Amino acid sequence: MKTLNLFILLVLIGAQNTFTQAQKIKQEKLTQFQLQSSDLIQAPGEVISTSAFHSNVYWFPVEVPCTVLTGLVANRIYPDPYSGMNNMLIPDASDEFNKTYNLEQYSHLPNLPNPWKKPYWYRSSFKVPATDKGRHF
Image (spheres, rainbow, N blue to C red):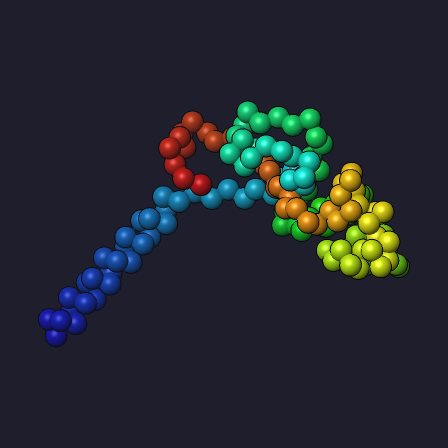
C-alpha cells in the first residue's frame, strides 16, 4: 500500500508540473505571409528573417496554410488548375514533361524553365509586446 500511495503522489506532482508549464507557453497564430522564389531572392535566410530585410523584388501575399502553387494561383500568376485544361498552362516539376508539352514557356520566373527547381521562401513579421520580452513563441 505504501508503494501505491507514493506512486499516486508522484503522478499528481508530475501532472501539476505539466499544467504549470503549459500555462507559461503563449501561442500566436500567424496566417499572413509573403512568398517568393529563392531564385529571385539572393539573400540568405539569416538576413531574410530579420526585421531589417528589405527586398526590391515583389513578394506575393499568401494566407497559410498553402502550397507554393496555391499561393501563386491565388495571386493570379497561374490559372486554377482544376478548371478545364488550365493545368496545361502550369509548368510541371518534371523537366521532361515540360519539354514534351512545351510547358516551359509558362514559367513565371525569368530564364528559369522549371519554376519548381529551387525552394521558395515564406516570410512574415509580427510585433512582440514589451511584456513578452525574452519569452519563446
